[in-house]
Every structure is written in structure tokens, then in C-alpha cells.
Image (tube, rainbow, N blue to C red; front, side, top):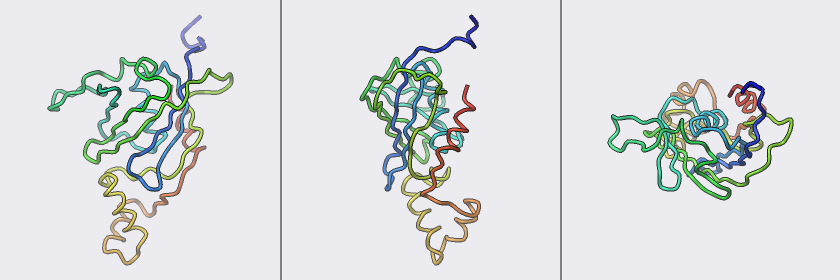
Length: 189
């Protein structure tokens, strides 16, 4: 049997991903195959949250850091995320961090809520719930995002027009489209 036709029997990890320091919380609940690499989990998180994958990332799990090794950094990432599987490093009820854009410092708390058996007929990964829109890339982290929201919601704010133009005409912080996210996730092989 070719590897394309082989059916995976690995468990499914239900993860709750919350962007730290956001009120109301920006979060997603996703189901992923436990046998995927952390690199693939990074791609899934980018799509589920709404990021554009323009910046570096890292996972912090049980005191170890995983990501794309870069010799230019003072504190090099210890382990390459391509060679580490989700089910090798986390278990049910574990919590870990996913860091994205080291300048803006977006920190995502990930909780392994449950490890489930694979359901027939479901294509993984899949997003099953969530709330709120992802902040725009490069808006300055959580504090910059709060300032951005103040500016776009107050027509009298001195930066209102420039922020509306910068974001491309409009931004709804409460927008969350589960169907759209799952269309994106279907692109992951």
C-alpha cells in the first residue's frame, strides 16, 4: 500500500489556542493529528489564527525551545521543529507556548485539552470553535493592537484615518469565520 493511501491511526489532539493578553480573548480550538511535526503545527496555527507567516516563530515546551535554527540569534533555538512530532513532546492537559513575530511578541498559550480517537470521515486539521479576529500583522503586539483599536473606532483620534488606510479600509475585531478558516486548513497536506 502506498503512503498516500495509508490511513493514519495516530490520536487526535484537541488544542485550545489563546492569544495571551487580549481582552476579550482571541482564541481557536483545533483538532490536529498527533503525528504531525511542530513545523506543520506552526502552519496550522498561522491559518487558524489568521497570521500571514511573515515572521519567525518558536514553541516553548517543557523548558525547551523548538523552531527554525538561526545561527544569527544570540540564543539559538535548541531543536528543529521539523523533526519533532506533537505527540512526542506533549500529553493531555499540558500547556505550552507558541511565539510568533519576535518583534511584536505574540504569545499564544496552547492547552492540550484532550487526546481523542480519530473519527472516520473527518479530515484533520480542523478548527471547531473560536472567537475574535486576529490582530493585523505588524501592529505592535498587544499594546499596539489596543492603540490600533482605539484609533480605528474613534473618528476623532489623530491617527484614525492613517490607521484605517494602513489596515486597508476597515477592520472588525469581532469577526470570526469558522468556515473560512477550515477552507484554509484543507490546503494543508
